[in-house]
Length: 112
Image 1 (cartoon, one colour):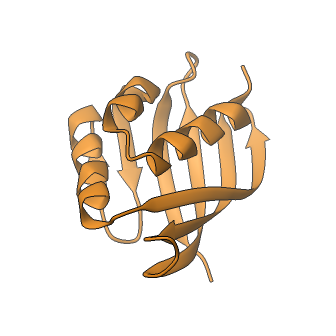
Image 2: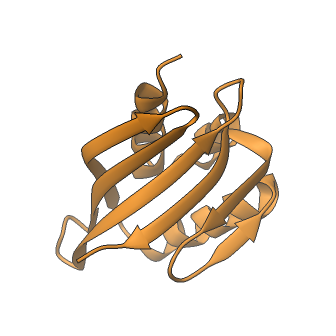
């Protein structure tokens, strides 16, 4: 199982604002933590993502560099909000996967 490919699929699904696609990628006990919010459990994490999707016209996540170690992918990403007109931010995502390739944890750190 190539976790970098799964992480890339996650970023594409997020960029497409596809909540149901994310549901298929998340473990039931998924957790999310970033600089503004945190959520635990499938429904709460999906709700947190949907709030982001509803707040923007577009959001595009572009991986810059990815590192894989055991069941974790660390990705340096650029997030362009509303085609970069509203903001372009650099973020580091740490994504943990379970043995079935489902996302267990997402920790996002705001970069410079």
